[in-house]
Image (tube, rainbow, N blue to C red; front, side, top):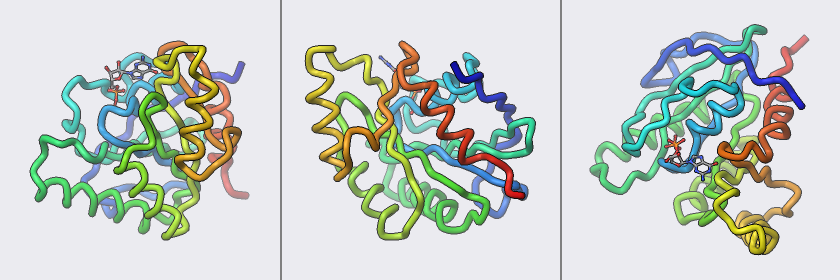
Length: 196
Ligand code: GDP
């Protein structure tokens, strides 16, 4: 088993310009309620590191975490919460895009997709945008425990095909059961190796 990522919260920011320099960084992005906070908590084996909120859309900030090595992890605001007015949505989009295009330290983005229902239309848009802009990314399917074991293989194929990928290219994970957390920790740690 890989050891938990020793993440400490550094600060929140509203724009990439407010983030301190970092030797190397990865980011997590996904639709509101996709299970992003739960996943970050699971990676760190901490209960309340990233806030797990029952009010989707409340976390509208870029949250920055640091490892003892100085490498950083960014939790981007969840996109696409329906109850939010268009003006606010556009603000989020600008913040997320500004970060993904402007953050030089960014080595990899982990795009979270709901393992039970994804990829949704918004996920499709995000993935198309990431591909068009050549943002290095890995897809993580969350909450895979919610899919009945008898349907899981079919669902994995369907989700991967929906993202134009092979099943093996997607990390299927559950913050609840811990499935896939080790693999994800390893992938994150591998991208956060400090440059020589
Ligand atoms: P975020 O908005 O993307 O940060 O999502 P949260 O981490 O706050 O999770 C949204 C909801 O999904 C909460 O009710 C969580 O308890 C639930 N959830 C998150 N991860 C899992 C999981 O792996 N399995 C199941 N069954 N529920 C999950």
